[in-house]
Image 1 (spheres, rainbow, N blue to C red):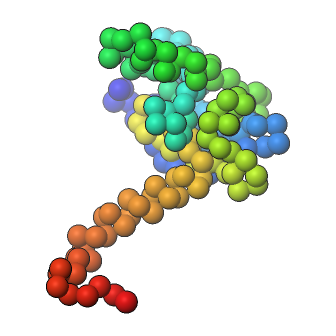
Image 2: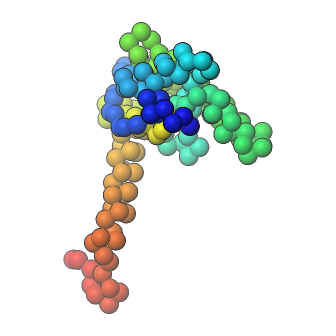
Length: 159
């Protein structure tokens, strides 16, 4: 990963899919993707389904396929490639999500069209809002448990 912080994805943004299954990449993320694509290495980005199928990942294609092949097994590449597509944006910076990605994430109905973009240093994660909110709620509860303490075994819990 580059130490140039102007090329690091950070932060959380919320956006909605439109009726044509397009979503706008956050402006900060669009700027970084453009800079890397136009840079000396001419990086190309792809969008893939995460291994646990809970969210999408946008990252340089070289990194994506390197990660898939690190296990040394052709089956790792088979897990990634069928669910990967090149990242492309229209003039307004909107990215079209494939029908396969939308189906895999269970994005349907008005509430299901809300997405959370998360910058994770060298990649962008796209989470369904409901999944992200549940995940964050569990994380916060886990962080609070040691502070709140747990009732002793012979003490009754709240009730």
